[in-house]
Image (cartoon, rainbow, N blue to C red):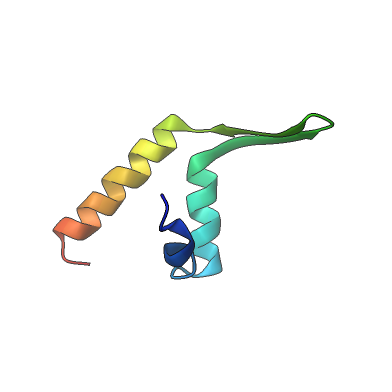
Length: 58
């Protein structure tokens, strides 16, 4: 995850939005700070997709 900044600039904005939609279920902003709820199934799906791309040589 420490190299995410460098990787994040690679995909087009539409792909960035798709990745965020897969990963983030809800974002809440309140007086006590920011609350981000992640989609664990989305993280699994994204990981499987990335592994398939690596296996296909993409």
